[in-house]
Length: 380
Ligand code: ADP
Image 1 (cartoon, protein in one colour):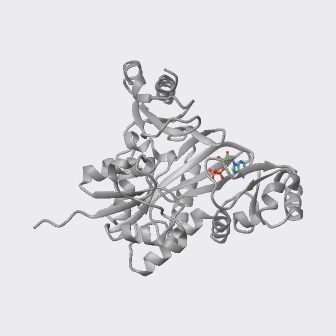
Image 2 (cartoon, protein in one colour):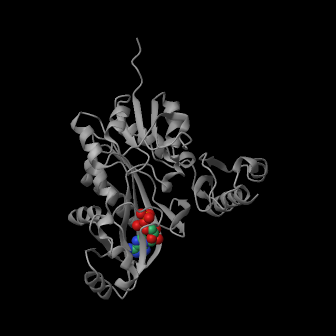
Image 3 (cartoon, helix red, strand yellow):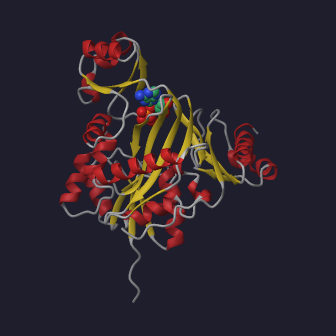
């Protein structure tokens, strides 16, 4: 009798879980999702609805699958550690996720590995923040170490007075804050990679990410005009992070290219990432397929590009009436090269509701087509 296909359990029912579903179907893998609500983006693969903060809920889910992985990084470490102690296969493991959940832990660990970062300090009171600001040109970026995403929990400060509300409530953030040098950057870059538990490591071409109001809006793959020495640097950084932190599955390393030429690490994501959505059409192996292969410890696929340029434009909600499917007739006829992905989410201003990718010989053409399609989808 044929063996049962491996069963992958994804915690979190967002668009990342949704986009893992297609390659799971193609490869004949079973995918199950533990979602927060019945109408999540990943409802097609949802087998359980429940609160991922509760050990018993996640334990019950873990019993139905062979490996647990994630759509987000918020499952409490205590829950994962308890399951690992019971023999549950968690990928990436809790010891790696600890560094993605807490930006201070991440900075400490990357520092110990000698990796390039902005100047930073742990802040426990107003005077140490004022000292840090004075030592860094009169300005700093202040971050809450836990719970931030899409620019929430990140603030430009010129004096401790700008952060009184956070300093007065340090207990809400684990007892301290992270202050960073405000990097004068020419652009933001992201290096996507994947690693198997048994060690195999691959990386995709470096990409440039463009943000609007702290949210990723456009990704250019490959990053335009990136010299070989930068590419060598960013892939080496990704490999050192993946190995040094014991990351498995897909890893995104977000970086700044500083005006003074430094490449410094901003953030880590230990799961498929917005900067890698282009890979669905733009790479031989998408980040979503690769993540499934990696967490199952299967051989990894080629990350070679399938086109000279891929451009991804996020569909960020304009209002609470956006309805992409309504706009399909017009968008599809005007932009036949556009590959449209919608996440099945209710419309809301600023919400990531989908994305469009165009692959082409020229970056200008890909960008114009992707932006054109996005404009029709968002504004009719
Ligand atoms: P989040 O966890 O919300 O994604 P990030 O740490 O990525 O937060 O910061 C969000 C944005 O703020 C970044 O994309 C970047 O534009 C800006 N930013 C963050 N840290 C710095 C820094 N040290 N110097 C300059 N800009 C920064």
